[in-house]
Image 1 (cartoon, rainbow, N blue to C red):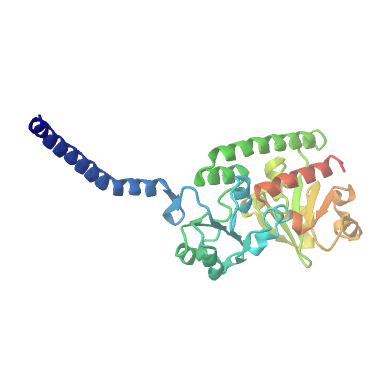
Image 2 (image 1 turned 90 degrees about the vertical axis):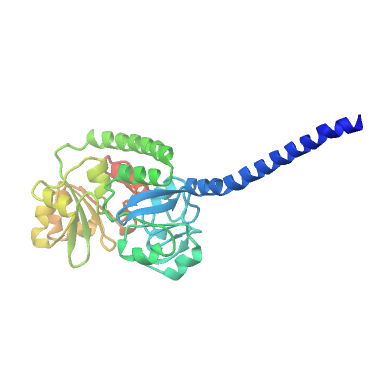
Length: 314
């Protein structure tokens, strides 16, 4: 009996040994492929102005020179940003613990390296060579994204937050539509609007994508500049103007950025005081702190502020 059992045990042992060896070889051969597949799943290639760039699918440490409000909307908080962004009236509370990386357009390479970013986002391509050596860098040139929809849609796709972007834009559109309906019910549709800035010794007029109120007035509320200068404003986006031609750029309503003068000051000014918008109390003066920014969050807040003024709400 013992001899007969041995005849069965020996082949069985050999079979088990062969199976274990085969499994080991299979695991050994498949391991590198599994690791490689995982790495590929954690990264993706995006087309940028600088060609194809491989970025993390879920970046954890983003340094952003620009487009910070869109990141926050998508619940993505950068680890570093320029000082100018950290002063944003509409975002500064949310950015309290974000590290300052220097001036916009001239960031400190040393500060960025210390933050160990896995992705850098900027609107300024001049620093691409230096930044791209630190981490994958995506450049979206200034002005390329024309409005909140383009901006949120782009970053939703870039960061894998498509649904979050759609949800926010749905709410955004509803708020804008409500504000526009209120304004349209009171202000004639053919009334012209001017976006201007008091720069002390000179003045500037702006189009629909240069801050100072252009986005909320021209894009969100659908208003137009004076017909005589409309093409210039929308094409060039800005114009330096003197008091001699001020009347040509002044619409029925003027939204004016000034840190030094009030509505009453402009009413007393011989030239400004002669403009129909000023005479009719259609001049709105606000500080640069609130008018300069034109990210999606700022635009939404500015639409509410200007709608309250235009509809005489306090």
